[in-house]
Structures are given as structure tokens and as C-alpha cells.
Length: 248
View (tube, rainbow, N blue to C red):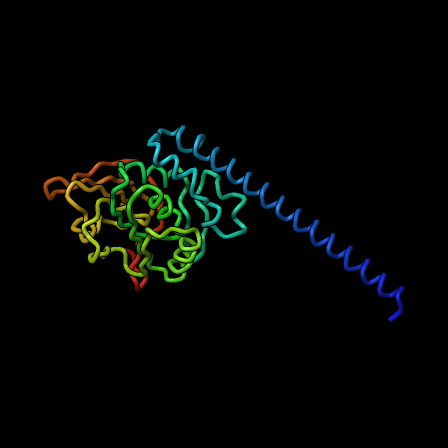
């Protein structure tokens, strides 16, 4: 090989190395800007959509600020992850509106020591919010693909206090009962009896109940073995379904 050729090869290598370094810096800068943008959107979500509507538990607000909602939705929907509405997550399911997630969490009046059962894992976002506050979350998802995806996401984000099960949420998770709190993110026509039985004395359950055209979010409190019911607000959730696809 001629010396002249060797010189040109060295120059070419140097140029390519410089380009690679420049592109790397640009990617890092873009990622940083994107991260800062999501942080700003989360802060706006908490202040404008949640705190402004009366959710004021500091633990709930901090959890909503911390959990990165955009990581729980498909990539194409990430620019809208902090908007004031639900988003599709596949398999005919949705991630709930941020305000509803915060409202349901707030209604449980968590102190941080609780063992919680969640029915309807979905994307895993609600479980992550709960896990930021309480001791342990047991969550059940009937759609296997969603449950496995949520479990993978939660594991990658470092949540080691969440247990995911693929199964029929109507039946609850008896092996780990009683639960200090139960949160249901799909709507049965009537409150499931197994969930009432698995709620600890003094525990609280938040659940949407009713047909798709007339659902109501209700709060149940177990006092001396009896369940007291309080209406919260009209809502619209996906129906609770069994393994055969029929609705409860």
C-alpha cells in the first residue's frame, strides 16, 4: 500500500470517529431534553389536573410526580402521556386518566404500611403509583399479554414490591389476603363477593360498578365485618371479564 493511501485512510478514520462522537453527544442532548420535557409535563399534570381538582395528599402527589407515565404507554402515544384523558395500551384496554388514578389512590387514605390488591393490572401504571406509597402491591391481570408486558416494565423500572399474577380478578388473590386496601380498575355489574371477603377489617376498597352506560365509582369500608358504601363520582371503565370473555 502506498504511503499516500495510508494517510488518507487515517484521515477517514479520524473523520468517522469525530462524526460518531458528535452524533453521540447529539443523542445524549436530545435524550436529556426529552427527559426534562417529560418532567415538566408531569409537574404540570400534577398541579393542573390533580391538585387543582382537590387531591391533596402529599404522598399521592409525590407518587404521581415520580412515576414516569410515558413509559407505560405505547411509544406512539408517549407525546400525549401526560394529557388529561385515557390512552389505549393494546388488547382493547386503556390506561386511566391521570386524575382518576390519583383520585382512586387518594380515596384509599394510605399511610405507607399497607398490603394492597389491584384488580386489572393493565399497563402497570396504577400499580407503580401504589408501590411508591405502600408496602406491597399484589396485582392481577386477565389478559396474559398485558400482564406479562406490565410485569416486564415494572421489573425494568426497579419495582420489587409488586407481584403480578395472570388470572381472574373477580376471584381476588386469597393466598395473600386479607388486604388492607383493594383497588379495582375494571367495572363489574355488582361488587364481587370474594373481594369483600378478602378485604381486611377496617380496610377500604375503591371500585367502579355498573353497566358500561351507567357506572359509578364507589368506596367501600369494612367495619365490624360489614361493608359500608359511599358514592364518589360517575366514571367509564372497561368491563370486568372472566377467562371465557363474558362480563361479570
